[in-house]
Image (cartoon, rainbow, N blue to C red; front, side, top):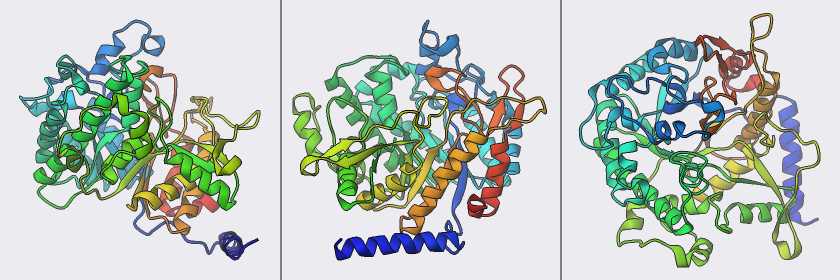
Length: 476
């Protein structure tokens, strides 16, 4: 064993001993404990007060596209029940709420005329959150793209970046005096890949790879122009970031070789797949497309015009990542990364996603090393099979166990020097889970979609204790 390995082993032992004695580093004093949701998934009010249709409204009308033919027309009726929902957030003790704005609610045609009633809704919501001492973190685009713009070419049209900047300006001009935290896009891998390549999400297209790369480039441009618009329209200092999928690779062991292999795999591009990090993050945070991707995709690359990369590469204040699980990787022959399959009978969520708590250690660590920005976990959680019991309560021990395990790993990342500023549980309440309809329940709060009754689950009361103790309850 070399000197470096001995030092690392001693540090691990020391940290573990301190942890067991309750003397380990806690979450930072001002750590942001939050929960998240998205406009189309919770709001409903699909035709109220001048809102225009989105591509999700379009897809939900397609037979067989959504589980059991369901839609977000009503969803959780948050558009009408927002006061009750803010009260629930206050009761849980949330320090922040990550919400998204419905683009077609603000601009029914995607551009041009601004719908005052749409802005009024978010105006009231933001005021209520602030009154409840819940800080709003606002995502400008969480997939509900205006149908009117889809009919004009959507993300395939290079003008989409300017359309987005116009929309962003309208929102920030209205809310920026109170909202200080902004995210441009949620999970571009999903709305590009699932929406335009696989056809499983809105708009339900199955395009060629050249078109996918073109859409991705336009989404990057929209992000960059969106950041410029946010900063130009904000009357005061603001923090801007994004919330991509964090595709996490977990070392199969603590050996330096396995760690190096996992890091290498996590920041590589392979094949015609959107499920990587660097194609979506390097242009934004480093100002360039990754070399391995450029080599593979040379024949399909869209035209990158002069100034594009400078527009995309805007200064950002934080790195957001949605992390639910990861894949274990070891060093194979010559140090080449090899995926290690999960063992038979490994833990799965109700959505059949693997339970891999270490993803919330290695993901933030590797991202922080590469992009060197403060990190927010902008989504993490699980779908679980829970319902009101005979005693009237909703018992969800799996969610409590899952989140405890993940947050302990996130705390380990903090103790090891990763600048993690906050954590947003997905989600505040059960909601419309895209193509899965109302089948998957991710919420801290149970929603009866027939009566719209809200019931705090056991996990909500547990999370309240976690927040109140700034994470110390995770070791209780």
